[in-house]
Amino acid sequence: MRICRFDDNRLGLVQGDSVLDVTEALQILPECRYPLPMADLLYSNLDAVLARVTELAPSAQRRGLKEIKLLSPVANPSKIIGAPVNYNDHLAESRADPNLSQGNVIKPIGDWGLFFKANSSLVGAGDGVKLRFPDRRTDHEAELVVIIGKTGTNIPAEEAMSYVAGYCVGLDMTVRGVQQKTFRASVDSYAVLGPWFVTADEIAEPGKLDFWLKINGETRQASNTSCLIYDVPKLIEFASSYYTLLPGDVIFTGTPAGVGPVAPGDIIDVHIDQIGAMQVAVSAA
Image (cartoon, rainbow, N blue to C red; front, side, top):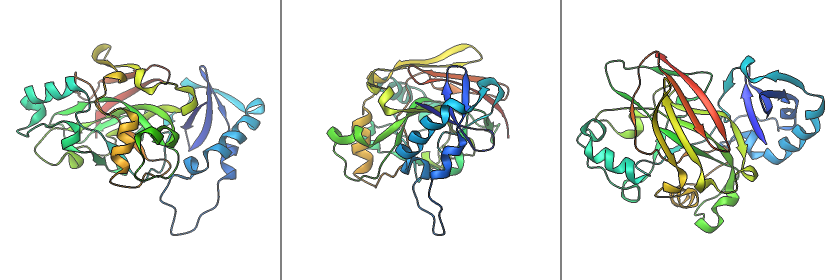
């Protein structure tokens, strides 16, 4: 299934160029009182929600994709996790380009570790990227994003795929500079997810997906997830060896070579095979 959030936090089932409004399925989610659960309620109860979506679909109102505003398919992740330098070609370009390294010693992911993006940086394709520091370089990074479906810690790689709820397209935006990566990557609107969430059963081999990014129609990045240094199971094993993963947690898997700056007025198109494509407008904050 392809599930989206749209307009005023409505839930949609994507079918071709249409969206079936199945918001009623959210009524099965449990009511919560303070303190609220850390995990995203939709992903904690995903099987039940999808079963209800199937029941509602035949009589659901149909909308055109072009008529709606697409929000992030995850509303409340406990963590947004980033995987730096997880493609060898990006590792090489980061070491060679001082605009990327900013005087830092660029290490492979096993030495560098992972990083976090603030939850407040999360937006959907329809929200767009808003550049907060026009005098500083801000770069685009196209990435496959994994969404966790159940709680786990110290997960071995051979069991990791059973913890995956599904996938979406990710756009990881980063301001260049000497500050910590987590700080520079956590600007509002700098974690774009979309255009929807594709359930894990529809992606047989997440390690064999072609993807690309274009700026104003010009191809900037193009690769395949087979080139990941740490593939999806290894990333889940690595992350969960340090902290517990919860339903709705988001893992940006890393970006290939071709990283470059954007400017207000740019249009970013990102496509991942078997998932979909999203178009993101860049503007000044």
